[in-house]
Image 1 (tube, helix red, strand yellow):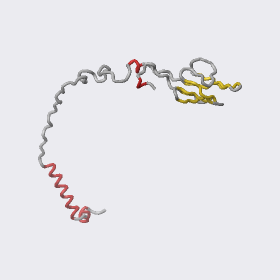
Image 2: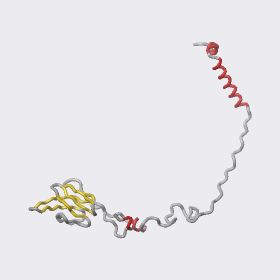
Image 3: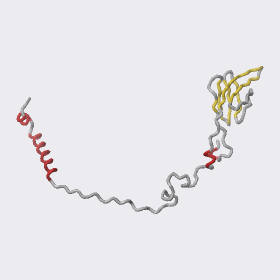
Image 4: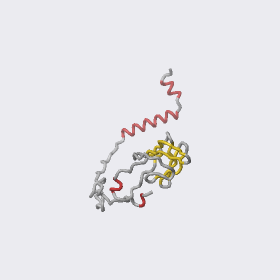
Length: 166
């Protein structure tokens, strides 16, 4: 290990000068007086004139705060959604040239349906060897025998506004 005078002699004049300037800077920071002004007094902004329907007159999340802006009535939007029909293909039957399918839609009606027949707004369009093709309001769905059921679209409300109808 080297002694302190040896370490100091090994350093250059630039390093010693930089160290001396840093030391003088620290002494100046501690020795010179500093005046801190008090923080300015905080005042709330002047109250603005309440606008019509502002939060000053009505709570922010009050349902009566503003006029109803959605299409339709509140009753239309608050009523429960219609049930989604799920058709499960339970059976397929072929007799001669006629094919029939037994579809369970949860209604309890246990009848065999031929192509062109259906319930509600869906109709059977084709009966295959392991699946049935259905149409509902122009859309095509398929139900597989012992496989995936066909999940149809719920029936729209009759009193829905024109913009909310499919």
